[in-house]
Image (cartoon, rainbow, N blue to C red; front, side, top):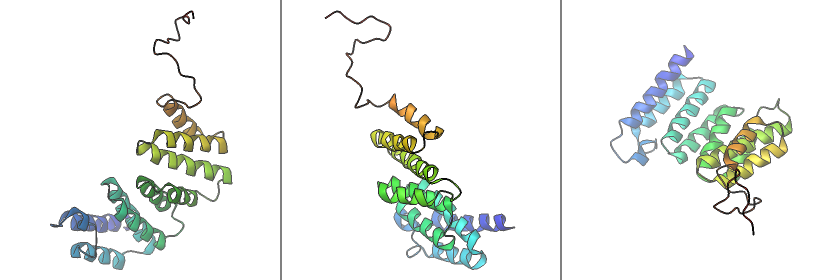
Length: 193
């Protein structure tokens, strides 16, 4: 019953956003969109705090998907107020912060979003890997390579970070690699000087 209620309340919130006839920026602002404010109040009234936190997390994800990272961050922070240990909301907040280029805050959120059962090195490597994913998503290949490299240095067995690093190193010039002539081919012998 909880998930049906969750889905119903989320659909009511989305309907309030879709039904807004003003600017797109105001559609996600409950101070300007009275229908959204009403839908959120109803969700809060009819839902327990854990379910409400999950609802906020899903709404934040939807807002991130459409690129409204500022609204998503507000919603994720509300999810964390309702359910402080929520790793999912904390990691999603990290991705929203990183999408805005706020990498230091994103890394802090990613660090707090790691399970306490992991070793400190595993938590740090996972946080750095998440930051690398966000940087790569923004098209910042060099920054992503650095984050993935730090993740692998912190936890040499981190397969996801190593795989991501390997995939990017081929697409970005390494500052340590020598400049090769454009005629270079690994199958042909070097030209005589």
